[in-house]
Image 1: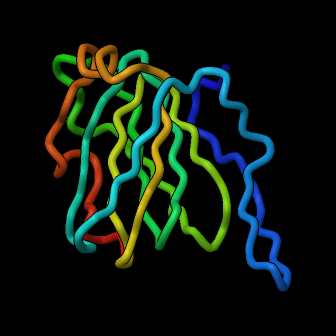
Image 2 (image 1 turned 90 degrees about the horizontal axis):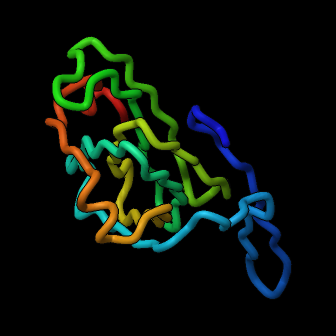
Length: 146
């Protein structure tokens, strides 16, 4: 099991029949559910959702997103100076970002329309019971990411 976020690369195959987008190296062993988020604009930020045991996988279906993560040091009172990292994911480049347990994550659409598929290692009931929310202004200046 990876304890740091990682990118799983895929590809896009095109011919006269259309496009085939894939991430063949992604294994669904621990996925229990998925959902799709569509942002209404590029100003909306969905952050921060912290997960003590849940793993998340992010895949952009349309447009592009900034997907950020931060390793939480104290779930009840995290440090204000934690270092957030981020990756720009785009539908033009097929890949999945895997964020393991122990991190908080957030997303922001960089263009409209934008849809992102999120896969989870927990059921909805399990996730609700272990999720911690933090203010979106912490750890990252979302407005600086374009």
